[in-house]
Image (cartoon, rainbow, N blue to C red; front, side, top):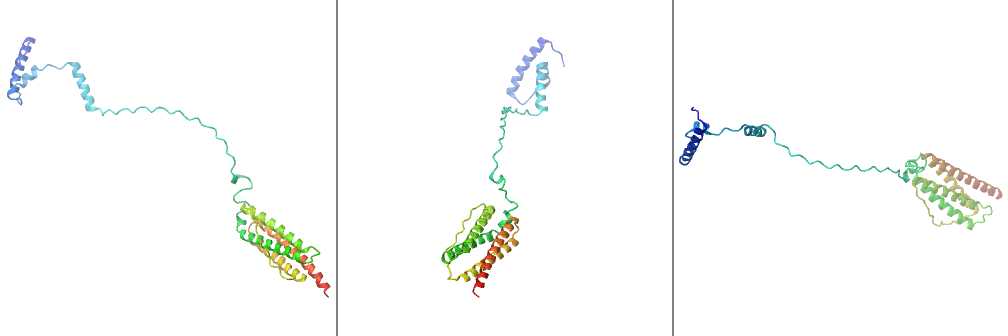
Length: 242
């Protein structure tokens, strides 16, 4: 291809541009002078080419930019308050454990028997007091039996409270008083105390609570002593009737 001087290149470019405008109006899809178009095109500058190459390379080879996440402001640490030990709960106090060795879970199995003894002792006390008001009891035997029943009631009520934590106040209705003679009344009271002794001993054998066992044994012993006293009194009367 021929070489052009600067003036000739400028004149040829103007002519080419004029011809090119004509061809664009006639047939825009044609490129009649590709070699002339390439020779007349201005050469790209070095800075422009480098910047374009850098931009194109970054667009073609690098991954899309990830938007930056704004930094979260730091939250000031909350000062730790000293923990004050709380007062012990009622269940944690000494003497209020859930399963004590005495008067606890094992004693609850005998709670019905204990309540039955309470009701029976209340009834007996009412009977002894009723007969003491009617009979000429110079020895005060019936009063002592009534006092013994009251002592039994207090011990049984204390055991009930130790097991359940609730107070119990058994009530007994006024008993029907039979027209007994003194000897008949002694016989009646003897069988009552003897049966009480037997029932207390049987309950002591059946319960698995050691403290409740000891209580029943003590009550059985007291009932046995009352039965012995009634037996001695009845023996003296039998000797007088001969």
